Image 1: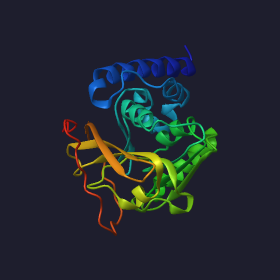
Image 2: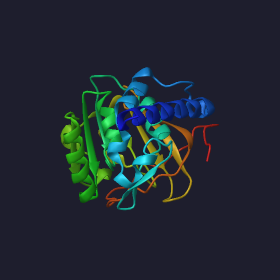
Image 3: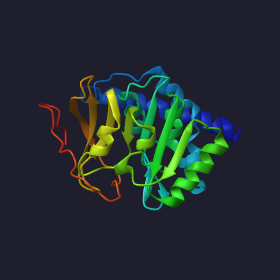
Image 4: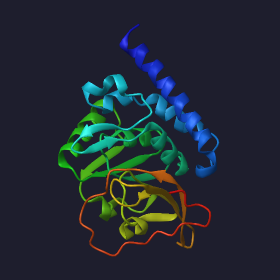
Length: 240
C-alpha cells in the first residue's frame, strides 16, 4: 500500500468522524449534515501537507495539531462547520483572519472565487504563502498584518472567518462585511472556554449574532485600536 493510498484512507476516516460529530452536535450548530461541497473540499485538500513532517502520521486525526510558533491547525470538524455555516457561494470573496498553516484557506479556496487571508506572525505567513503557491491554490492571497483591522483594500466581503479567539468582536471586521454577509468568530478569554459565534448583517446592515457551541482557540493577537462590539448571547443559545 503506497503513501497516496494510506492518505486517501485516512482522509476518508476523517470525513466519517467529522460527519458523526456534526450529527452529535446538530442541535447546537443547526445542521444535521454538511453541504456536499464542504465534504468535497475537505476530501480534496491534503491536510498532511499543512502540518510538520513529524506529525504526518496524525495529519488526518480529528483534532488540532501544533504548527509551531505557539499556533495550531484547527480540528477538521471545526474547519468543516465554520466553512459550512458561512453558506458560501462560488462567486464569493472571503476574508480569513489567522492564516496559520494555510489549511483553512485551502479549503475555502475550493468553495469561493477569492480568499484573502491575514497572518500576524511573519514566519507563518511566508510559509503558508509558499505552501499554497506550490500546491496550486492560486485564488488565495496572504499578507502579514494585524487581523483586527481586516483588509479594507478588498472589502466588502461576502463572508469573514476568524480562526483565533477575540475577547470581543473587532468593529473593523463588521464594517468590512457586506450586507447579507456572514462572519464566524470564536469569542472569549485566551486559552479558556470560548463561544463560537455566527454573525449576520442584513440588507439594512443590522447586526445579529447566534452563539453556537463552546470552543478553545489560540488568542487573536495584535493591537486593539478601537472599542470592540460586545457579544450578546441569543436566548437559549449560550452553551459555554
